[in-house]
Length: 462
Image (tube, rainbow, N blue to C red; front, top):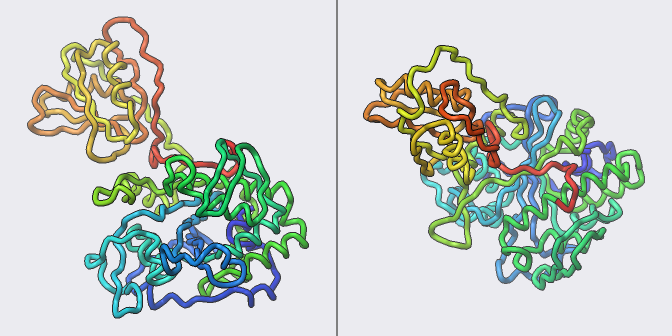
């Protein structure tokens, strides 16, 4: 199934290899690159998929000249991470409006990947393709994430349409009617099966739906790709040589790839992931926040660091870390009503601290307070003055698995810092009163938690 998402890696049709436009990007990626952690034969593998909005060439001209934003751009950028055990795939969408440090232009020849990163300039993500093609995009991604990109593929409008038509159309679901003049696309609300031309309009639609943001468009694109995976599985594409050949022909006829990514490596990768089903493919968007200098742009939020770390270390962000348990059996010596507790929400999940306060109050902790933190962390850390260690132990009993951290100048307070994966408040052995603990309504996923994912087997209307 995953073979489709890397443009038909299962194919042994050598004649298709000549269709692919090969690009040497060495002049743009520079020499200071991350260390690869895998290759086509084994280990984690990272492939950057880009959609080009080029308006030249057969099948591309009818979408206008692009005079409002001259040159090629890559509005769709997806990092495909194939796990080292070849049992799952994570597709990371990078918003086109992200403002990120990027290699500066040099001598009118596009971005220069050899310029040290401390001299980079902040630039909108999709401008990098315009300035230096796939090489500049890859150098920018590697420099900001320390993730090595093993291979890349670029597909244009015509190739996209051809692949959808080769599948016999792709089902979509829209809760509202769409009328987008710029994408030249209209669609009534409900479920539809789109041909290639319609599907291109659907995934390009942005300003006329919802809040008009690129983030909203990314969610529709992820739902569409999920549907592609489901459709390919239902139609048994890989078992139909005639349909597979049409699909591969459409893909390779409008495809640009690196010089080392031929049909041989594609087949190797396909064979290693042939057991992966749609339930093992997940989509995620790089977490963003408002860009202070321009309301129409975004910047990567601190939670993005957690996502990139997961990709770097080959973690599956859909698998929560095991919940910790309280193992300290020493009797508690300080009653809850003798402790001043401050709860800090460092999880990025709204309402988590307030929920914790209610769980503490019903057990006798007097007037605990809360605030929002300025960063992101994992688990629960309990800070306390060295002479308040016994008070901190009582508080820790309410948060199984919490880490105790002595801090000078804390005074009488015991501070609870809730990070991603923080457990719900538990019952303290020496609690006061018998009012039941409130049922948790807010949760946060452990490890890379707080980052929303979409599984490819989800219903397309969800």
